[in-house]
Amino acid sequence: MADAALNRLPARELARLVRGKRASPVEILEAHLAAIGRANPKVNAVVTIAAESARTAAQAVESALARGDALPPLAGVPVGIKDITPTAGIRTTWGSTLFADHVPTEDAEVVARLKRAGCIVIGKTNTPEFAAGGNTVNKLFGATRNPWDLRLSASGSTGGGAAGLAAAMMPLAEGSDFGGSLRTPASFCGVVGLRTTAGLVARYPATLPWHDQSVAGPMARDAEDCALMLDAMSGLSPKSPLSVPPAWPSAYEIVARTEDLRGVRIGYAAELGRTGVDPEVARLCRDAALALQRHGAAVEEIAVDFSDGRDAFITLRGEAMVGNHLVRIDKLDVLDPNLAGNIRLGLEVKVGDIARAEHKRAEIWHRWRALFERFDLVLTPTSPVLPFPVEQNYPFEIAGKKLESYIDWVAQTFLVSLAALPAASVPAGLATSGLPVGLQIVGPRFSDPQLLACAKLVGRDRPLGWAPQAA
Image (cartoon, rainbow, N blue to C red):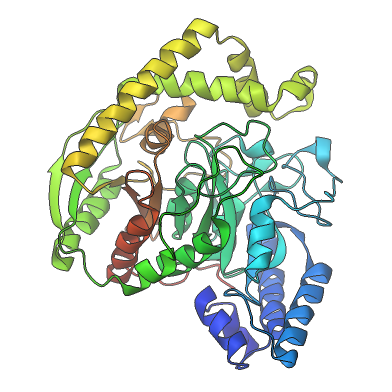
């Protein structure tokens, strides 16, 4: 097979080629390294290229093949790791000048699991400093640009991973999600991102190991690859106090065999709060949701309002900001102003504020729980806006309405995170501008395979094609 084709194949196909000895792991790796060489100077998705260690790993897979060893499910498949996730022997900076030359000696648990599944770490993907922000820009590496239009943002904080996928630099990308950091970049870049059920993917190391709103998750170009990666990432771990085993033998098998949604009850809500939605985004997402009726789903348009959870999320986010950066409180002057500002706001939070926020969070969770008694899944636009200029930190208005706070543009995602629910973003189509629009699929805890099964059918109905900057 010609090298030029390998970087555009799904991860599952690459794994099949390796097992069938139709493409070598080294050949696959070199095709992706070449793609990074072509696209990354423009997109800036990969900030550290791990070519040497990746070649060693690929050669090890080749040796295992030659010996006739049984191979793990993702043997020889390249993966990008977010630059907040420690990788042994590969620079990990958290997008911060404070850690510009930091090289960990131990893999994060999620990286160790991906390696055991056969993945080859090809490099580290860009993130805002310490993953704090909805636009992937930092002082150390600069901005990640959207492969659909280089003038625009890839969103954040897993913007490097999403852009790397869309630009065909890698078939899989690991990321994290607190307020929407896997979902909004997936929406902006036209890929699939899954915010996982809390505890499903062990978070180690973690400064706040009991924090259930921040999770790790998979990102890929389609739902089936995302499910395959989820199987590799998830599992019980003694290193994480929230760790839980998956409630299924294989998410990939569930997604792969799903061909219809008969009996599935879906509620479609244009908004989760009161921030508004761009009319074209709303139209594309509504059309994608209603089209699932053709796959047997019962789809009902509903009105929900979780906007009263906004202040609770901001308060709890502030508490987490202080907790995560307690050792850096005396270094706020060298941190990104956006991050430093969030920490300062967190320092103003009082115990009573946190108590009230937790009470509101409990109320919001029970309202979601009641909604899931009526519906199996709730669908909504992932982002209320199309990608904005990369020089902006955030959009200033939605559908002509000025935002009260910079964080309100991600209310569609953070009102899901507040209840620690799993959610996926899948492309719903292209706007008239040629930019991707993401549809968010929300479900109860441990519905992760069902979210991806639904995303598979949405993606099948609405294939985007390749981004203009795809290598």
